[in-house]
Length: 485
Ligand SMILES: [Zn+2]
Image (tube, rainbow, N blue to C red; front, side, top):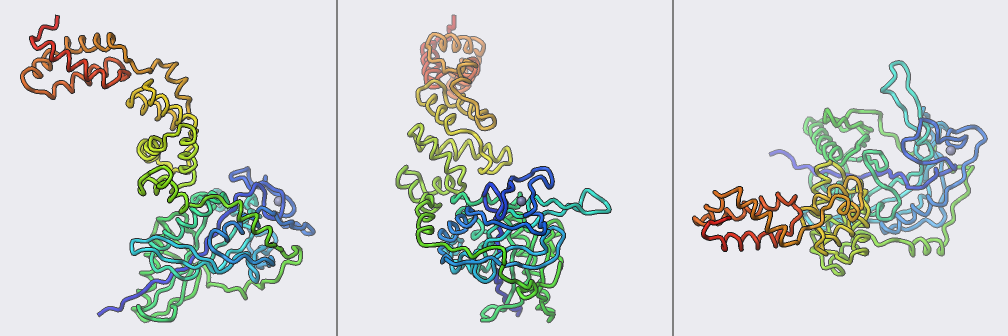
């Protein structure tokens, strides 16, 4: 009988903070500028330059710590992590080892097996490195220091997770918390959230941990899942063959679905950490913590409960609307404008989701304004446009954020409620489709639906569908003789 194994997983999640300027200088943190245009003597490691801590970095880190049930270290320090690498101009990274800003937290995750608590060992503040560009040049590597000095927090979990499902649940929960706080946009594709996975396996029931490896280069939730499955298999195969797992850092290749050894795993000793002599300790007094606590926005779980209680939305709808900060913001702003939460929810849950899938976009990329959706809902409620026309207009709002009131005026899309006009259109349709009229009188009642459809089409979809239905029926019943004049 083959042995049963348990997977033990801990995460190190790097999150770029949404500050305007870098952690130790005034350079811009904007993504995608011309190479080395967001740089100065500090973030390019020039001798004699001195770092000055960005206050907002501390506030974001404390906010994330409070939202993840951490203890805040009220006297914390920065340390130098020494290593040579060409994207690291100082030959050290300013980070925190001895007194990280947050410790001993936890977050609760929901899994198929129920709710679980995952511990957070610590959160520390540090600076990001630059970027090396190998691809476009054959014989040389280029370096771009725009990212050098962009503020990061590193969230280090306890090794409390046992499956890829739990890891994804943890990452999604953490991302929601951080996005709701406005501390980061947490885009995996752009690298503003990056997860390293520490994984080991052990025989089921064992009380000691196996040797772990660390996997880097995971830039999507799918890659995280595949890397966990792949590395678990690799380690179990080694153990089954009686060979040791080596403690090392591995790079996951998502195309080949295999991880490759990068370097033997180093520990803190190898970096010769020491307190950074250029930066004074950071003292975070009670008043500062309380001020940050008082500013904390409503977080995901509270919002989820409120949407059900205050707006009477089903749990499923509330879950989707709160699954992304941008979507929740749109829902609330539009509802505040038009006072119709159910209708707003329907537009977001049905048409918006359909269009997002069609355009292969995420909810965080929604960019139409609540004003225009609220106006569209108003137009439909007042009967100015019917449902079909409203959907057509919404597609344009979705892509171009147009003002629906102006658009309806310019394109003459108001619903035609004028009986005379509808009657004339129905008459024309019945005249052109005598077979359908005969079918109806012969007992095929479905023929009426066809005639209604044709009449709606003849009026460019703008007629009031209720009126068209009524008039078609009246005229069919009234013209039982088949005399259409
Ligand atoms: Zn700079």
